[in-house]
Amino acid sequence: MIRLPSFTLKGDILRRSFLALAVGAALALSLPAVAQQKYQPEYRLSTVLGNAFPWGKGGERWAELVKEKTQGRINIKMYPGTSLVAGDQTREFTAIRQGVIDLAVGSSINWSPQIKELNLFSLPFLLPDYKAMDALTQGEVGADIFKVIEKNGVVPLAWGENGYREISNSKRDIRTPADMKGMKFRVVGSPLFNDTFTALGANPTQMSWADAQPALASGAVDGQENPISVFLGAKIATVGQKHLTQWGYVADPLIFVVNRKVWESWSKEDQEAVRAAAIQAGKEETAIARKGLTASDNSLYKEVEAQGVKVTRLTPAEIDEFRKLTRPVYDKWSKTIGSGLVKKAETAIAARK
Ligand code: X2X
Image (cartoon, rainbow, N blue to C red; front, side, top):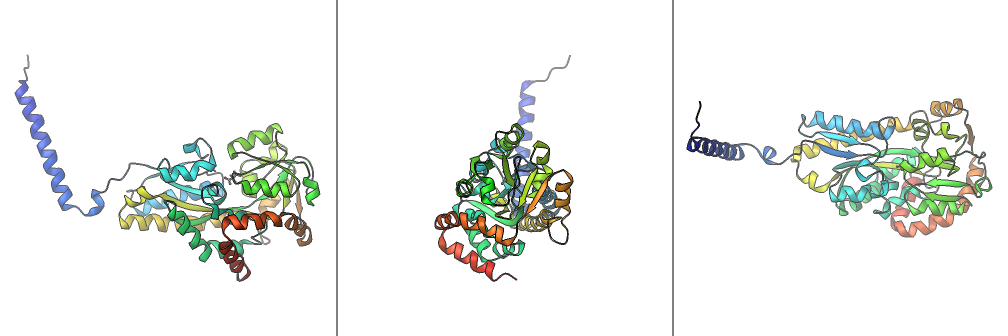
């Protein structure tokens, strides 16, 4: 029979505790600042779309580059479907600020309810082409917007892209605003979209992306607007969306961000690694988002047509009809966004190379 006297056990525990303390203290004194900071075993990255889309590919690439550049000190797991906020895209920014989400790659549209300046990108027909988008995100306007995000308690690091949002529906080809009359469209999180679709004579209804797909399938709504990569990735043609118009009315950029407390818990070296990873992932993601959608390579449009979807391409004169009707929305929202910022954006676009 083995008897362990209790005083021996106690003594052992005490000795071990003392040892642990002593070792801990020695480590704290001898190691550089990096090791003293508390890193979480995993950081949670929120996106709306998963890796079947450029957006989710961008998120995964960021995570991969961060792991590489920090030698595994920072380990990121992506949560697509905005699942950390139960799919409610419009609550994502608040959740990042509050620390429910550690990092995110988010659309300007989804964060517009909290950051009114982000409505800039949703002004109808502001952005004639990709160079216009780049002139904003890579210029002074982008820097100004990052300052606003920073002031709101979130650390912005880089830009990516969701893309030009083309309009599809199950009813008929859209060539003039009159074709949209009375048609029910699912629109995204910012009330600006309600105004735009109302100005065009349509019937907009706001819902999350999670709710949009069943609403399209059941015919609760007639149409939607999203980039072609999303139309294809989410197989929107299979829910009866057989008419698509390329009107280029709005494009949404993506923004790579980190919760401020999380950011501050990292060493300077790791902060710079995460920033460099975001910039690289953002560049790669933007290239993926634009692939197959240009004049020299329109392969994604061919894919859409191969699915039995009629693609309508508008002439500049036809686009002007849509522009005219939405001009009051542009003017109204310019005041909300800040006329200084809108002017700066218009100037940058006019001067684009
Ligand atoms: O909800 C949408 O339409 C989507 C996926 O494009 C955004 O999150 C803005």
